[in-house]
Length: 65
Image 1 (cartoon, one colour):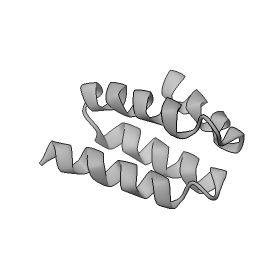
Image 2 (image 1 turned 45 degrees about the vertical axis):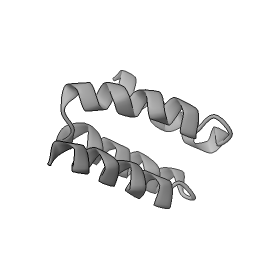
Image 3 (image 1 turned 60 degrees about the vertical axis):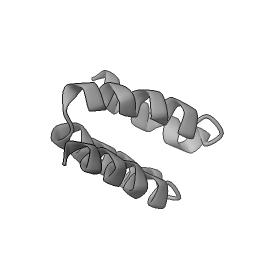
Image 4 (image 1 turned 90 degrees about the horizontal axis):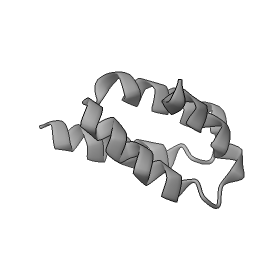
């Protein structure tokens, strides 16, 4: 079940990546719902996903906070 939440989170983040405000909001929700090891996995995925999307780099501050 927890794995399903992780995959769902990635799907949502992909869908809202057109808007940095929505992306940050969804990322913040995900960080409260995911397990710690899933947050680590999500961080790795995000670094790859936003590599060519500089407008989303600001959202990475949420993970480091």
